[in-house]
Length: 423
Ligand code: AMP
Ligand code: GLY
Picture 1 (tube, rainbow, N blue to C red):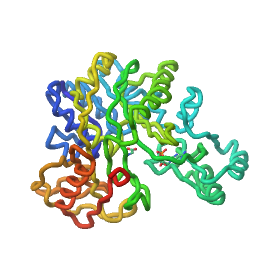
Picture 2 (tube, rainbow, N blue to C red; picture 1 turned 135 degrees about the vertical axis):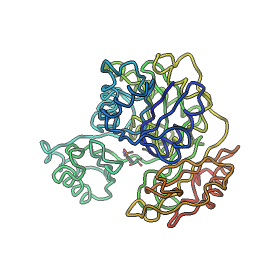
Picture 3 (cartoon, rainbow, N blue to C red; picture 1 turned 180 degrees about the vertical axis):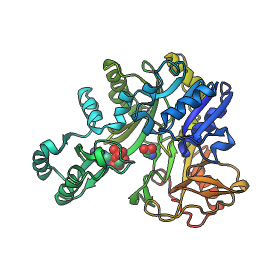
Picture 4 (cartoon, rainbow, N blue to C red; picture 1 turned 60 degrees about the vertical axis):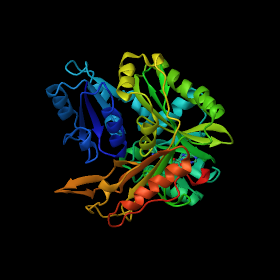
């Protein structure tokens, strides 16, 4: 099969790494890709949201399958776009535009969960039309208060206000000043839940699903989970508190009603569902849905997945995922993310990366890099993900840290405490 993978981050390098191992993959293209994916297939300079160029490319290169990495093209409706005559023979791994609303609209996902009795924080939604009711609601709400821009806001649309003043100010900025553009024309205000988070992933064919290895990511920039939020500074899999009994609750109370809720509404969903879960006194609640894999979670999930990923994708297309078993490697995986100094605020790009060729015992996934003459240079906040597998978590983390220390670029920073609560 000729496969086109869309995206350019660490998640896409990890997906490309797994896809390239498949006996069913004859040729792999990645658009736009990065220097890491270039070692596994052919990078194509094409934006993930440029549907017309993607169409032209797929026809010209006889592509059989398109795997969508990031949420943007899914929320913009790339699955629906591929239903046109010239493209409908191509398998698209990702939900329809309607299905992608699970991530694309917090108001949609909250209403969906409420209707399906899926455990989640209590909430209300507000716009300019009921602004004054929102002010009154916020004033009597218990602290802290969680405010979420309805639409996609590049991971920045959630504010946890510690005081009523901060909540009112944020509410004003989101709705009246459109802090996140149209994405914050509508705001979801919800109850704050206290617990420990984890990420659960399924691959769904619309009828059946496979449960992938779960993961936990480390979002804060500083050690001990302090400082600003980032896209993710590292990840581990498996997650010690996600035992058989917790997982059973996640399946019964969250995964099954989500899939039946989609079916009931005739929403086509043939792709990954990422459940952002919080464990509140041993009960799982949904913090958010994403319509894609996580980053850096994919960098620990793919190395622990024993199945042929492309074979799974074919089962997604045929709606026959019930005929296979998803096999997870018994080992522990840990990813340490190397980031640019200053991230998640301002940081420099273009720093020459050295040491990549002298490493062993880890998989290096490129996240924000580019090739410049004969060098690989930094090209983003999150630069490289170092993943290691071992028989226990501590050894996996140690191995990733060892290789993280051997890679050099000016301003390099990483958290050395990934997995700390469990070691
Ligand atoms: P989201 O973009 O929805 O994933 O939110 C970003 C982060 O905010 C989550 O990963 C949580 O750490 C936190 N968060 C979101 N909603 C809540 C909530 N209701 N209670 C506590 N923390 C939350
Ligand atoms: N690591 C969280 C995310 O991908 O949204």
